[in-house]
Amino acid sequence: MSFCDLLTGLPNRAAFIDHFHVSLEKAKKEAACLALLILDLDGFGEVNERFGREAGDELLRIAAERLRLSISERDFLSRLEGDAFAVILTESASRADMLAEKIIANLNVSFHLGEGKDFRIGASVGIARYPENGLEQDRLLTVADCAMYEAKTGGGNRSVRGRVRGHGHAGRGILFDDCYLTGIQEVDMQHRKLVDLVNELIGAVGTGKRDAAIRIYEKLAAETEHHFSTEEALMKGAGYGRSDAHFREHRFLMDELRHLKGRIIEGGEIQVLQLLTDWLVTHILNADKPMGDFLRDKRASGTSPDFA
Ligand SMILES: [Fe+2]
Ligand SMILES: [Fe+2]
Image 1 (cartoon, protein in one colour):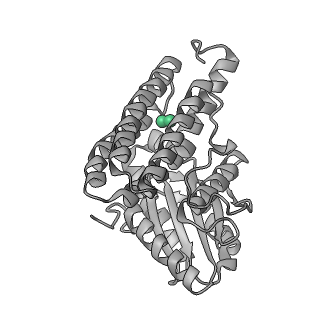
Image 2: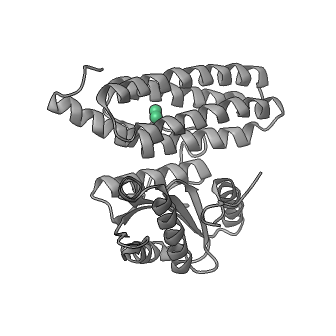
Image 3: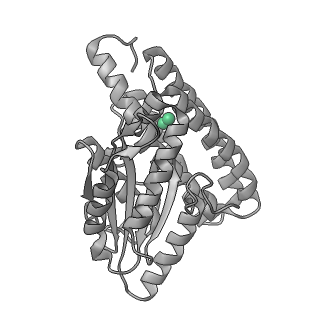
């Protein structure tokens, strides 16, 4: 498996998951702290629309370089996907707030993307801390993602600290928080169903029931396919401008889902669960929630066909 993002030269999502796991285990052993920053560029979609894909890629390369210069060499920076990045701070986790501010300031400087192509973006940063926000990787990722989304919906260009939560459910599946709601009833019901299935799968894997796990996995794949077609119909019906990228992401996730079934059969369940929870949460927060915002606006203005 490759651990490098070809566009920016940064470690990719797989490397991030790997490093996060190792860092967290180390922090537990040494009773140390750890902080996770998830950041998403504000206004990035507009670069591609105005100046084309190449300019968008150039912006990502420059942003990655600025991020690299913002962190210390003990921090671990990676590109998760698209315009989303993550930083793991394993020492002096208390630096997290300061680092978030520094990152935002460095990204706020205008990007020169070629002749007459100057562009400004912002950044929304979510911060999760171990052990305050959770003890397990999934939980910390969820907290950071939710905080990032809160920063974005609060107007962007800011950082938000994850809310302190109890540890009762840490690592025992996904808790369907309010922050996952898109406001589109049909979509939210299907998301809840997918989350339930992932949690069921976690239960089956945890108790070593591999046959049951495979059955649940197959059901999850079928439900996901159905869910994607529901969302795609809603997006088409409402003329959603970002539907191409969203459809592509769906196709990518479906391909991966099919591919991962082999891994479950080979005994790689834990890694599969990690990827599944990670995608589900990331896709809902980064792609489905903005879609939900658009669909709700359309419905409010009475220019969209009826939907649930
Ligand atoms: Fe969805
Ligand atoms: Fe989606």
